[in-house]
Structures are given as structure tokens and as C-alpha cells.
Length: 212
Image (tube, rainbow, N blue to C red; front, side):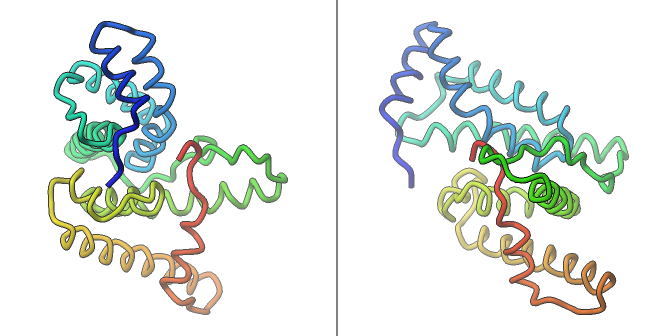
């Protein structure tokens, strides 16, 4: 499990002493991964921005509850993920459709400045995967995002979601199979040829969001 970074702990302690610049450093450091998590969970750029701001606000208001023996990023991401789950459930209660296609413009491109055709392909793949992610229940979507976009260990995901490693492995297996089936069915309809399911998922999930 990741150990707390001494510099991050220094900023946390300074923020607790009302140093706003110190908390601004924490926001600057983690705003991209938090936004990307919120976007992957919610599928809407504007809503992800609102959720990101709310996550940092909640972190600031509850900073004294942060356990310095725990990774600050894991703690922050748990705040963001729980908030996204609450928003997603409220959206479902309001009967808003989860099948709408997310906007590709909201997906950040790599800072390596790819060629236009490469950028278009990356955006298309990201949009496709985002649409499929939105079809998963949040209990499957969140561990999948944390595992394949943020390289969290099973133990870290289990801690964040307050469950066991075996439960996380089970959810990841079911999530992968569901996405693989959706991808396989889509490709079969398009080409009449069915790819190996796990290989197809791995190739599509390879591009990672900015700021990971």
C-alpha cells in the first residue's frame, strides 16, 4: 500500500494551520486524477467539474479527519468516488437516461501531441469505452476505473470501498466480462467476426486519462 508522501503531509499540516496556499498545492497536484475519476464515473464533463469541486471542498472541511498513516490520494479519491456514487444514484432516481453518448471533447488528449488521426482514434476509443462504462453498476464501475486507469492494488481498492480483496476481484471479473461481452457483440454486429473478449477489452482500455 502506498505510503504517505512527506511533502504532501507537510502541505496537509500547513493547510490545517489555515495556510490556503498549502491546500492549493494539494488541489493542483490531484485535480486531474480526481476530475478523471469523476468523469469516468459520471460521463458528463460539466457534472464532473462540479463533483471535483465538491470533492475538494469536502476534503478541506474534513481535513482533520484524515489519517496521516493512510495515502492522502486514496483518502481523497474515496471522497470523490462516494460523492459521484451519490450523484449517480440521484440521477437514476430522477429517471435521467444513462445511455446518452458522452462528449468526446471532454476527454483530455495526451500531452505528447499526437497526430490528428491518432487523436481522433484515441477520442473515438475513449468515447466508446466511456459509453460502455456508464452501463455498469457503480459497484462494478468504480473498481474497474481504479484498477485500470489508476493502477490501484486490490488492497487499496478494497480499503477505499470498505470491502474485501476477494470481493473486489469478483467485481472486477464480472465487470470485465460484462464489458467484454458488450464489445464482442458490438464488433460482431459490425464485422461478423468475434474477437477474443479479454484481448479486445485490454486494447480498448489501454489509453489512460490525463493526469493519472
